[in-house]
Image (cartoon, rainbow over all chains, first blue to last red; front, side):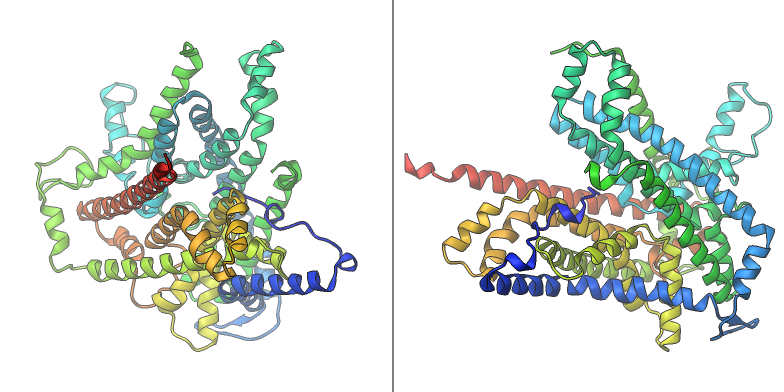
Length: 309
Length: 279
């Protein structure tokens, strides 16, 4: 998950005028072979990413009857979307999930990455513990959600433990199928998207900078806030972008963990799809995509990733 | 060795708790999947048995678990091979400046961050308008590639960023053709990283849900089947299934990691051999 900007790996450009004929021919050849090598990815992304986005934008202007939809150009889907108070509540809810998840994954992810990068001394242990953090990423999200049931349920481990400790008398009802459960599941699923990029940037921090800070009389906390955090910013941003986009685009975690009691934009779309209301689903999807891109744009305002890499 | 500061112990505790948080629920359902035949979805254990595992292997009242497992496995392999091949080609391409490389780079990033449901919906709509049937091996495959290719490509970027170009130059100086350089020099050097790309390709596909939801057609993949079960199965059989697929994922990850470690060792040994006969 190392993020690298494309500029890092392509050769510097010479302007066309300074090239000899031979150089120009070579340039055309490498350009062509590069284009051909990238052709499969072009093809996949054109048909399965660009095509679908264009299609969704187009369909968002189409009309719908109860059972089908037809080509048209009207703004009804958007009018309905923006005219409904549900939309605003749901978007607000989506932002709430994103913000809370971002906060918790950042705090936990930073602490874990910091421990791995600065406190674990042997490289073997570092790799082993890092792998331990990443293995769940390669297992099923759905199963990982299901596995919270025995813990959070009405008669689950959390409730029975709290009752046996005498903290509560009645089982807490808000553990499973609630916003609490949704956030918990998000943090559970996505913290590693923070850990990996933050750990990666921390490893690249020159240890002598930290020593220099210590020699200059900085306390541990000052080193953290004045040296480590600023240098870890690109990793934090990449992790934040991952977490925020994953949470904003989610529809399954919210549905499952809230027991269908809470809604986010993704669920709004999937409900429309369930009702075969594709034009309406498309309009919501367009607004969601715009919101996600806008959010990333705002986040990139704070850190220029390209400059910092 | 330097004395450990207090913050070490605090952070070690945080790390330990994080591990518990990460693996605790999985271990819990693994234990609960051995519930007795009359046991429920939560503790206490009502006896210990393999009843629910046996149940999985019998004719299912709901769903088609083994069929969907077969499909997910096949699709995982297809996605894995495609991801490795396309990512290597793409990685090689991005080392040069080619027309549209910046645009393609941004498309790859978009593919990674776009809400999955948009891919699902859009691919479904396109197939619908083209009059094609959605099927896990066509639309499902394409939709999953939009998720696995960015990861594969980013890994290749990282690999080629650290790649020492002098090996290639040496090969070229010895008269190797462009293809020979790739085949006999570049590929063997990057091979261990390809194991990583393959691991991403297979596991991300095997567990993919959101992008496959509207693109798999009438035959479900395993994650879709499991999700279907969550709404109408209220016995520990779902834990048994969860435990089995998680164990399977661990097995796959373990196999890939072992393979990667072995490949690295073999290479390290080979390198240290060089020049031994010169003494």
